[in-house]
Length: 75
Image (cartoon, rainbow, N blue to C red; front, side, top):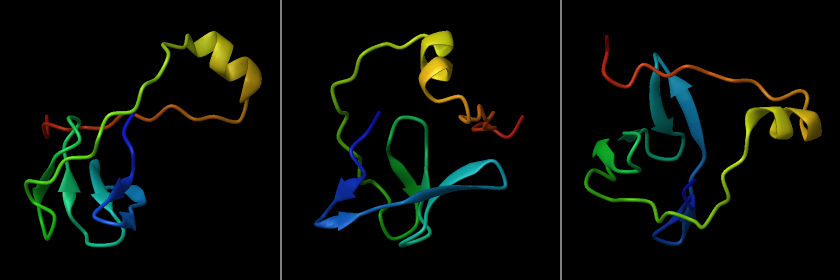
């Protein structure tokens, strides 16, 4: 999990053609929290401390959650 705040701006993300894209600048992000194209290229989001959760526990509390498969490598 990563902090979506970067350079005094809160980023929001969407999946576009299997890629993670921020809605503010259109930069493309990889799964390691680094912007690989666009205005924010080279910037990284800070990791936040998190606990490991099992899906069955998460789904019990958030039954409307969806799992999505992202194709990060274009395979």
